[in-house]
Length: 297
Image (cartoon, rainbow, N blue to C red; front, side, top):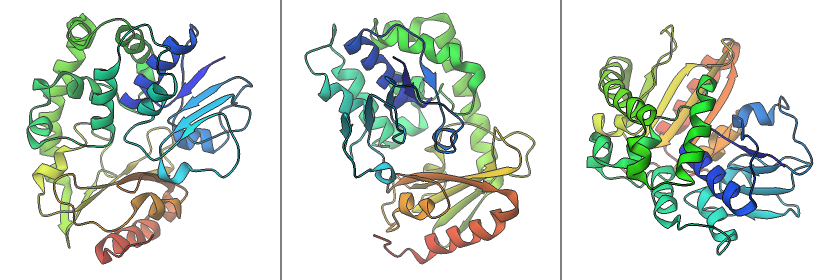
C-alpha cells in the first residue's frame, strides 16, 4: 500500500493524515498531475491517491479539483472543497492519534488562497504560510525533504517543525528568494486588459517564489497567467492561471478553460502543458478568453 500524492503543501498534509490513520510506513510516491495523466506512473493495486486525478487500480481516492470529477463508483471522497487534506481529515475523523485541526485549517486556507495581504507580503510572520513556500512542485531533488516534513508534521506542532535546522534554513532561503522573485515578476510581467501576463520562457531557469505576490504587485489585474518552459521536458511549455485573490473580477472558470488544452484544476487556479510548437497559438487563445472575461460554465 502506497500513498500517491503531489508535492505541494496540501499533498504533504494528505500524506501526514493517511500515514497516521492507516498506519502506513512506506515512502510516499510523489507525482505531478500531468505525469500521472500521461501514463508515466504505474498505479499498483492498493495504492491510495490523494490530491491527484483518479486512476484505475487505486484502492482509495481523495480529491477536490473541479476538473478531476469522475462519474463512476470508487472508494474515498471527491468533493469541491478548500483542500484534499480536509476531505481526508473528515473521512478518518476519530482515527488519528493527535489533533490535526490547526494543520488542516491552515491547509484549507493556503490551498484555496484564502490569505490576507499581510500574509502574502510577510509570510515569515505566519508559520504555516512560510513553510508551504518551501515546497516546489517539479523539484524532485527535494523528495527527502518532503518526506521529512511528512514525518515532522505527524509528530510536532508548527513551532517545533520550524525549529528543525533544515526547515529553518529553507524558510530563510524562501524569504530571500521571494525578494528576488518580486524583482523578476516586475521585469517580466505586463498588464493587458486586467490580465497580468508573466513570461519566463526566455530565462534559462524558471524563477520560483511566492505565487500570490503577483496579485499585490498588479492590483488592477483580476487574473494572472504565468508562462514558462516545463521543468521536466524542455520541449513543453507550462502555463499557470489564477484568479487574483484581491480582485474578484474574473468570471472565467480557468480549470475548464485549461482542460481544453490538456490541463485542468480549480475554477480559480489551473495549469496546462503543451508542446512548444503549439504554445503561441494556445497561449494567444487562453489570453483572449481571459480578456473577454465571459463565463464558460
